Image (cartoon, rainbow, N blue to C red; front, side):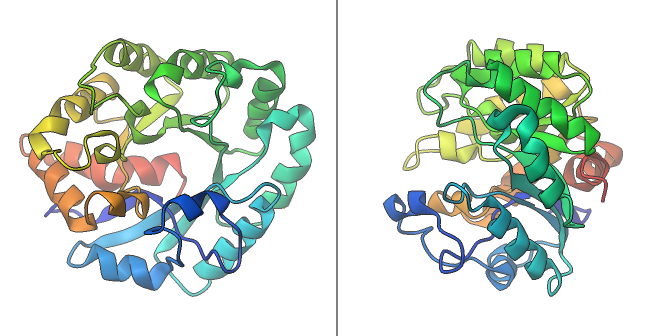
Length: 283
């Protein structure tokens, strides 16, 4: 296990009895409450000093309820240090009202508006969406980019057009691991890393591999390439719990990455496991 405490930059908590998550009906294993107590039970022996909640694609119009529920959880759970909430950024300048409402929560540090499900690979470059993303700078909020590998060109251009906004790429851009396709993902990752306002979460990797046949060595090239592109100055650990439960448990992911980082220095390991997330989310 890591020789430093972990700051987990990507955790999902939710209660479908309180806020609706219609998409979960197709994923029975996830369609139940997962609360802070469940997280503690699942992390087992892994030492975690803090977690960042990331929005869970609540039903349309329920994002403010989700944020309020998370803030209430933090009142009883000291491990919950920050929140990345949903905001309908496609509203353009009008999203300022949503951001102002979300900003009332002390836990808020960033926004995510899922892009992975959009059929238009250039959705992120629509004028209204870009205008909405630009509103984040005034509220000192970051943006979590969650896209599949074929949507990376638009993500690169979005980050380029919004240099005043801090971005972090979720799940290393969801590469086609199960198909074994490194390109053009590898080239796009290098291009995205060339933008100083973008960081990368080493999270959600196994989800993109073959769920029945994956091995640590089968995912290693993608993890190592992401770290090589962004360097230890701009990568951070994320578990993607609870989605990760579809393929592996919490200690397994931590142990796999700990093995991959065997040759890294103590400073590099500290940056990866905690310091970069602390700095990025202003903890």
